[in-house]
Image (cartoon, rainbow, N blue to C red; front, side, top):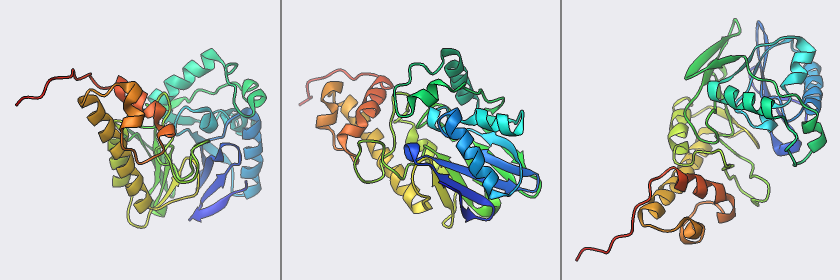
Length: 286
């Protein structure tokens, strides 16, 4: 669970819990940590690993989206380095504000006790479309490419290293119960019909030589992202076609032709149907 350098002064740690990636980027002004894992306790373990790198002090945190496995360890970095700026898209910050108000007592997953003991940190540096973090000898570009995995996804581009940190807009590891193969994590807060367009923006930020760090799993290349974008596009197209043909939502998973196991697309179908107007059945014209 330590860090591996994947490009010039860019290190990734693939954490065992949730198979989530945390990235550290170094500039002459210090370190930026992108995502902080899922609880205060796991964040503290992450702080120890960042310190073990011996590459300097953390000067900022970036949160790719509001899900606990990426955002709930931030408090450990504030404990260790004081009142750091925490950057996120404005929608992700609003969702984390709601999570902080609601508390974490309803969480029932793995490491529940750790999550319940965590106080949610709300990002204090937000943006709507794009922002830049100046590290002196290099700049990090924060971009909201649109809605997909959540409403508040962002990606981080490190131009001089040709690295893109994609958060959960790109997945190399399958979600729990999905079997083998790369399957994007469609959740109850996803936007399956818009996700392909957001990945078009992500692809526009890459080159043929780019290293893309997904939210979960091993780093990938641009070709991988193109394939996944096309598969996600097929899901969106199939949902639109099913709705247009008047197929009831309850029959959609069994009726449709899907690039992923149907069991992984329950939320994708539900969300897609909720985001499209119903087309009434009509008799064919002859």
